[in-house]
Amino acid sequence: MSNEQEKTNEALKKYGALKKHGWDYKTFFNRPHWTRRRFFEILGAGVTGSYLAQRYARAADVTSSGATTKNTATNAIFILLAGAPSHTDTFDLKMVNGVTPTSFAPQTVNGALWPTGLLPKLGQAFSNSKFSIIRSMQSHALVHSLAQTWTQIGRNPAAALGNIAPNIGSVVAIEKDGQRRPGQVFPPFVALNSGAGVGNGYFSAEYAPFKVIPSTGGIANTTNPDGQTTFNNRWKLMHSLDDSLRVNSPYGTPLDDYNDFYTSAQGMMYNPVVNQAFGFTTADSARYGTTSLGNACLVATQILKANQGTRFIQITSNDGWDMHQNIYSAGTLPAKGKILDNAVSALLSDLDANGMLSSTLVVMVGEFGRTVGPLSAAAGRDHWPQQFAFFAGGGTKGGAVIGQTNATGSDTADYGWSQQRYVYPEDIEATVYSAMGIDWTTVRHDDPLGRGFEYVPTTGPVQFYPVNELW
Image: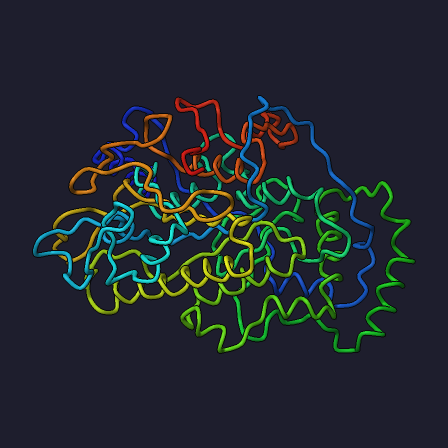
């Protein structure tokens, strides 16, 4: 047993997060993805004979129990606060005498205590009923890599299908593929600042996250050094040579994946819409806080506004939320809180101003929470299963608090939803699917193990459901 697994199992025993379930864990590694650089290297090179047939549809035998979905969202933005913020210092504030800074300036907003000194803009958005909070959520694992993966695939990475499970965004991409219109050239799943994020699992690479680090210049390599005319002529020549060879090709999925990316990349070459969506001005960046997270939120808004076929955007906040020491120092939580406050409040404001918030579900979570009450000897907070989840837009109601924790925030006192238990990552996944009109009980019978891939696991000791109280 690895040290990481031992730490995880010991932590779970200590905190009792899964004492009723008896689940086991192991180290998990990230799945494949396509980087922006590789995406355009494939196309920009010119002629490469075998990779050129037209994209063909892929169908799978699927079954489901026919669940009724909410179907209120067209798009989704999923923000992962990597490192795990302290829930009792942010979205489930607990003022600890002599510990919590008075500068947090707590006020009651919609019946909930809010750190107006730390998150003033989000506090105003909450007052205006722009988002809701789940406070009865718990993580299954307390190791960053394991819990982050679990959050992105909505299942135990160590379970039978965990190693081939796709990102939630890849499931959305494959389900919404049939709704793409001619001329929509953006990838269906875009991941911003998410280099270590989970990929497409066993799904075709056309549903993999298109990973981009936002910059003012937009996406590089969208032109050919020999000019557009030469590029177009080469493209036509490649098709004339290769199309007939692609019929009943013996090379299988890897070749199909290359072809998918060739075709997708060609649509983004010499396309002014691309850099309008992926690039930005310094003035616009300033509105979002001139930060990596802010730029990602800005670009996410622009991508959806372009309406070029992207339906799921993952944003990873790599801003240092793993605060084991000096949590209240100026450069730690106060600084990170300002980054979050500026970025997410501007995201909600711009989506609302553009008429897109009602159709765009915004979800924000960390991979777990942090210890409560007095600080550790290092003046920080360590890993803890109790956490929060943030939901905005996409037809959900705003200004609500679902579930309540006890006086210290260490555990749930009131679950606040129909299942009368903790909300788990699988329930968050089911909620995203339901919001987007995807039957979360779907089972695809195309997985390489021949077991049947459940969008949301149903064979474990807990049955998972959407949190319908958000509507």
